[in-house]
Image 1 (cartoon, rainbow, N blue to C red):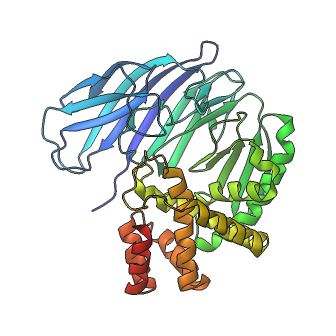
Image 2: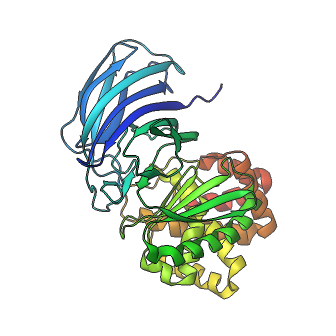
Image 3: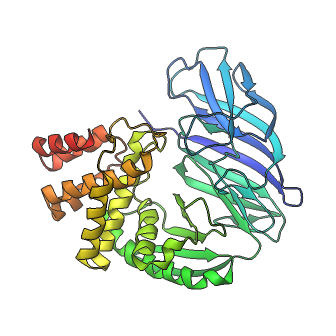
Length: 400
């Protein structure tokens, strides 16, 4: 059975003077279920949905209250679509959404915002209709915006900018500014441009450039990547942290960059998501993204700093992991989810590497990446294939 991705074709107008957006979204949705009856999507709470049309007979309702459905999506409302006829698995459904609304700085983390100096729109308070299980999709966005703004990873076409994301992802982030500055480099056929807005971040941009060269040279051992061009953007905000999307890494100029080891580990973690980004981020399977990215960062750190620096971090992780809940079936809303996914999961991988050795562990990472493994069961199957049943059982105990 072939794999079919959803596709968003979007005409987006951004009115910076009024902090207002208008969008017409064509969503080509592929049914993953037999006899699909209901589809749940989420959108930013302040966007007014004018209408939804479909090539199938539907009814829909839009909540007026904020939905508590995902721990890192805090200001969205539910769009519930009901189908009036039977749908088949892999059947394609065409939706048209028309909506508009004001967006300023939103969410307590300030990640999504529409201000004169900085535009950052993504799924954290979704500006596009986001499926409830965050299904991966392709994005093609035609953006009408003041000509003075540059949008990261976009191309000029006529009077508008085109943002085309050909690698499937659960998100499509729009980053724009009037006065981007950048430094560029290339490592192992991966070209990286580091963007910044404020001149005071120029030294940080050059430091990130140097780190990225070292890290990419290490990570390329895991296997080739689909995207050969990446933009790293230093966001001009203090809160919200960083994230990675296809072709894009966003970081913030936090205090951690004053420490060379913390700076290296942070950038290395985000770069690692170029390889480890295949699993559902809204479930406990996210450990295959976050734990693998964190431990990859520690491996790169071990190669570029002293062994004792690596050992010190592992010792601190052992202390922090005491009394944490199990990785398997962890609720993504659990108050300890961050520590479990970033710290305990990385420690599990360290124990696995110590058990099977660095050479076998590297082979395992290569196979996981090559085979696009995105569930723990498939991961355990690969562990048994590369190693043996005993190692699989050893790892299974660590996950429970």
